[in-house]
Image 1 (cartoon, chains in turn purple, green):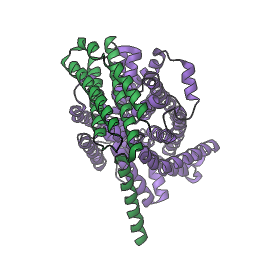
Image 2: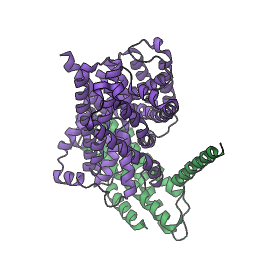
Image 3: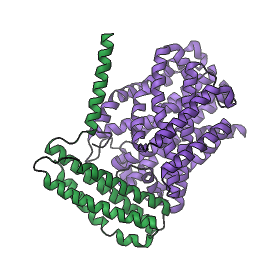
Image 4: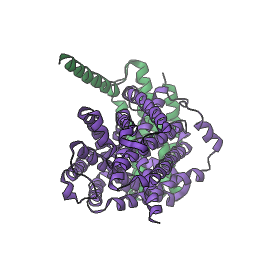
Length: 410
Length: 150
């Protein structure tokens, strides 16, 4: 029974990791402007993140060390520092955006300005971080995150013309008024939103913290192969409801409130309440994940002790980095910087970092001296190489497209 | 050492040029018309968003707190996009377009402002009357967006 429960929790964590503020914003924007014409990007993202999360988890299970710690020891300190600084910058922006996401969910429920909620949201995150054990955190936000399935129900409730949805999904090109540059910009934004590196950091170190062993490999794989595709299904549902409600009306999505609005149209007040709870849970979980991922990343680079299985005082520098980042993100959010704009910029830069973070994982997972019988097979190598090739193209195109389309406006 | 400094300077120059391009005002008549068209589309988007929120209010399908937030955001975004456009100097030959769009933008922000005030006061019963101009405003903004396209 406990194994079943552990599996459920891991699966829910994977869903929570996939759907964060980046997805909530980017999916709704894409659905409103392109319908399901970028649905294929979500499929690519699910395959990509599943492939690399499985590899990172397998490395952790085999070596009892997080994937990135090993990768850095192989590729050298300078490469490691580049990855660390890049991912730190992106993840710090994402912490600010996720924290604002919690506050925006509370604003929707109360009509009190989100900036007033930001310090309280940060305090709540700090209390949870300080007091709750790792598994309890997973359980709470994982189970609450399941409420995001309301977006899937809303697709049915809105009674769409299914042939229109299918036709849209089968047309991988821009809609009439949109340019190819804008279409490709949103390809980059979706990849960046859905294949966030912190998901992998978190999954890998989480496997070490949970003391998973090779006998747990099947559980790990089921978590990946069920959790991330479910996250992808939620992402497609958000795109679909935005398409159904906003596309014909010419609505451009710029707020979390607009992400939730189609659920109110389809399922009424109760649906909206459930959606707000889901948004709260998804952003709360993602705030914790991004904080932990950053703390893990810095601590592992400098060789400090880290982790939630220890008392905060026993991993003082890890705790200091994590709490410091939370305070910095709170201060940044209070500058009134638009969290949605920050999210879009962060996910685009996140997309451009992906090859630098994926390549070391592929190299270590393919090393038979380290991995022994758990080294990559042909399928993992082919998929991993294909994903890296795609992320290299994305990385090269990200900044020019961001500029050319003025952040997707043009 | 010199090469490294050169590439660092080049990198900074590219980033600065890119940022300038992103925030630069429109250049020439075509650029101005394009910006006018996208401004009209953005204003229409806010009007349409407000209409959808109002529909959910009328059917008792939403939390009033959420609808209030949605209406406030619609007005705030409409004001921001309108003032952004009005900050651009129109090139010769585009004064009429500027006047048309500014007039429509004023009507839009005023209508959305009335809705926001009524929602914050809890005067939900007055919303249907206040929303009456919205469908026509949306049509006029769409027509202007099409007409402005270069």
